[in-house]
Length: 270
Image 1 (cartoon, helix red, strand yellow):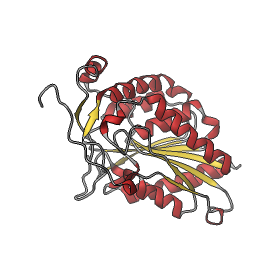
Image 2: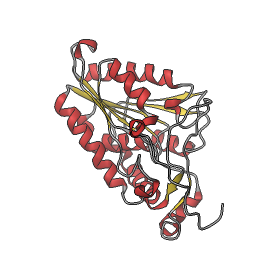
Image 3: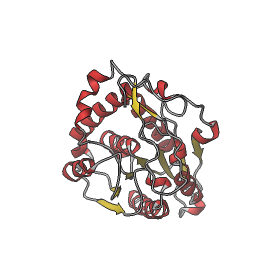
Image 4: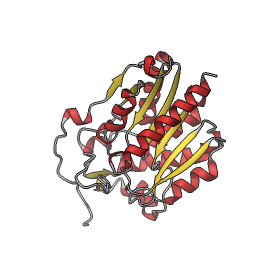
């Protein structure tokens, strides 16, 4: 890689791939309860990485809100114009809608999307029956992250992190470049989140790939050390890389997350 790296060429994304999703609850499929689920994609990704999971949840009768985070799904340069606070506000609005229309709400997310679910659980635990996270990012062992506050002023982006997927032919349609101003804001958000992990008491189901080339073991360690949730379980995925929602273990994630959602929302209803 040469410095300065100016970023990969920008190719337009198919609007259908990156489109948000919003569906209503079908209580006849969920024992008469109206249950809503926030489904959140990760950094430099878009709803394409989560659509199969969102569609599975909708088919089970859950209301689904799957927003497109600001700066995503367009051009990677757009991501340098927004911050962690914008993404937190977006997921907050989605939960507001779900809470107004349903009896119980669960949030599920991949990578940074998982971190945003954790942020919601720390700030608005009373609004959530539980969260499901997949390869959630809250920390890193990479020492070059410490350079981001300075490097972001010198270089607009570095080579991207998209498509860490073991399954042949799968494509998350993420950005080819990692925008550094956005990355610096994200890691600052993670630092705040780590300090607030003890505020999280809602049930948490965490899936972690045994081999992940994007999020390292430090995030798992931080969750084990920091969460106050008495109902917390980590399950290891043996046949997927980072974007496990599109990988070989996706059916397992869908089935086991549905079991978790049914259990915690039934408990929330008393």
